[in-house]
Every structure is written in structure tokens, then in C-alpha cells.
Amino acid sequence: MKLSTGAEFIHTITMPTPFPVGDVNAYLIKGDVLTLVDAGPKTEEALLSMKSQLQQAGCRLQDIEQVVLTHHHPDHVGLLDYLPHDVSVIGHPYNAAWLMRDQTFLENQHAYFSRLFVEFGVDPVFLPLLSQLHSTLEYSCHRALTSGVMEGDSLPGLKDWKILDTPGHAQSHIVLYRENDGLLIAGDLLLSKISPNPLLEPPQTGSSRPRPLLQYISSIQKLLHIPISSVLTGHGEPIPDAHTHILLSLKKQEERAKEVLELLRQKPLTAFEVCRLLFPKIYKRQFLLTMSETVGQLDFLEEHGKIKAEYSGETVMYEAVRR
Image (tube, rainbow, N blue to C red; front, side, top):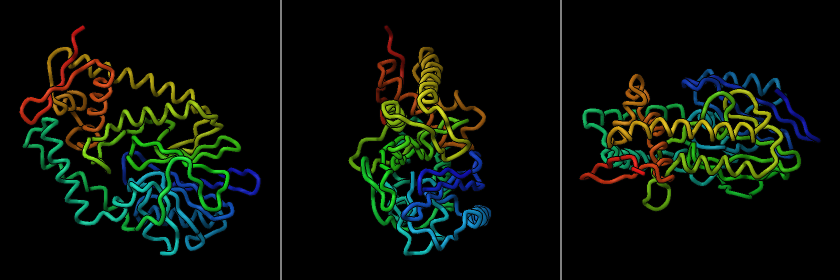
């Protein structure tokens, strides 16, 4: 797909991924600076696909002058390793550690989740599943972030575009908003066919655990207050009516939370016990994904006063609040 506005052209580049989510979208913006938004996973298939589609758009990998990252997940950053070293890599400052992922970073990740899963009541027999935390990073990159951008910042050579901070799906997540016509490049904040999963991550600053689902809800609610003409998504087709899509997503979220609340009305449970009840067939294969979804729903219910969390030793028990 090619979109044009004035002197600007936007080409959609769709690449295969090794993940269940399927193909990923990157966007080539031909403005004053040739800009790539996101970069696909580090696989030979994705690289060949990108090269072919860049050629169709009249350029090569070597022509790209800057890359803007919506967030740090491997399916959005991996091919940075194949771009020239003088290409500017721009994104939220929280991307930096995930892009370089040195040994200290990996060790801190493992230590954080080891403590967290004790708090969530994960049976020790399942702690080897922690190894899954880094299993997807082989498709990521080792690349330095050139410059950080945050809420309200502009981008070099793209004077009409502004950055909006939208944490939740990832702590590093941003979106690009073109003010003159309301076009939004949304990364994984909004997806046409599936619900983005706000993933558990260690805190980037301070010691408090981030509440990614609560962050995500705040991020999409923020979009209800700005005019959006169309949304270019990280996966799947564009979304023509963003506000309707957001309101429907918020309604579905409340329905998912009610399912968890019903479980807790029967008896107090740990987060891990809730996870096994919600995802009995897949929690072992997609441990971080299912635990993230579960903890997100518990955070949502606690925030709304529907449940309370109390420590029993090192483990947190969740129970419904009796009215």
C-alpha cells in the first residue's frame, strides 16, 4: 500500500515473522529524510522481503537515513543489524537497553522475573519456564539507540509528525501522529484483528512494578481526545475508525475482567493459579504472554476496587471484595 500527502509518500512494507502474530508492518516515509518506521525481525526471510519491497519503492537499504522505533520487541527491531552504521536509530529512551541487551541486562531480567514469579505464586517446578523470557531475542538486534524521543517531540525531516508516549504493550512504546491530517502510525498500540497484549517488564526507573494493562488503557484513552483519520498498524490492515475501535476494545476489556472476577468470587487465588484456569492449554508454551494477560486483569480489578491483594509470606493472594 502507498499513501501520499503533498510531497510525502508512505509505503507499507509487510514482512513474515517466526511468531504466532504473523506478518509485521514497517513503513517507509519518503519525505525530507528517508525514514523507516520499525524494522522487522532478524530473519533471512524478512530481510529478503524488505529488500524486495524497498526496491519496488525505488530505494535500497543503504538509502535509508533514519529508523524510528515504535517499541523494542524483536519483530520491530531485528533488521536494524543489516542497516548501515551511520543510520540514525530514534525511539523512546527505554529502547536502549533492549537493543544492546548486554549480559548485565539479561541477568537483571532473569533476577527480576525470578522474584516476581515467587510473588505471583508460580510453582517452583515451572520456574524453568523463565528460559522462555529470552527465547525470542535471537530475532532482535545489537544496535545502539542514536537519540531518544518522548511526548511532543518532532522528528528530523518530518516536520508534520509528533511523538505520543503510549506505554503498555511495551514500556518503550510510542506512536507517530501527523497533525495536518490525523494519520497515526500506531505500532502495536492498536491492531485491527487482535488485542495487543500488554507485557510484563522490569521497571526502567524506580522499583515499583509497572502495571502495563493500566498503562495501555490510559494510552488508548488518550487517543480519544485527538482527531484520527486512519491508523497504520504494526500487524494487519489499517483501522479506518480509531475511536470506535478503541471504545470496542475498552468494552471487551471489561468483559475479560469479569471472567477473572468470577473465579475470585469462588475462592482466593494466586496470579499463577488464575493463569492456569484461564489458559490451561497454552500457559506452558506461552508463559510470559499468559502471565502478562492474567496479571493485567488482576491489576485492572484491583485498580477498580473489585479485588484486593494481600501477602501470604512472599506470595500475593487475590480475593474478591465482598460488597
